[in-house]
Image 1: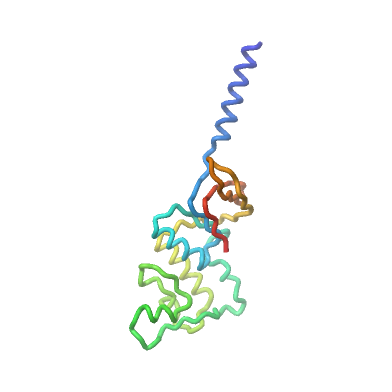
Image 2: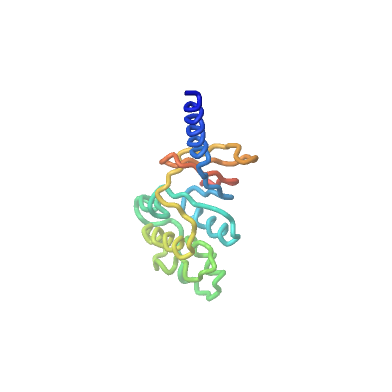
Length: 174
């Protein structure tokens, strides 16, 4: 009987060890939200070859702009025609475009309106994320962020709506 208890104890201990050793994804940077700021941050993190992830609670980037502004027109200008051919000058007058090395990914190619429709911005943001292959995890609502000790350092622990956790060195939250 003593051997049977010892064998059962070893089996239970092995099962618990396996469950506790479940891999936790670890990133250098975790960005919460894939609106304009989150996508711009992702672009520069990717360009710098950093280990990052962007968490987006909805199934699309820029989901805020599917609801707001209520009148559907952005208050930021989309100055497509500046009268100047200098790309840098033109970009300074385009308040909606994000920076990238891809010259075709500018908001002025999505709308001719001075105050563009919010749906045009949503389409632009999603094209931006897709074309640049940004690491965005959609349908992931971060419900808890805390500081934890993990592998001899202090990290941020992020828990999503399914109680799945990851850790990161730097948390970027809008």
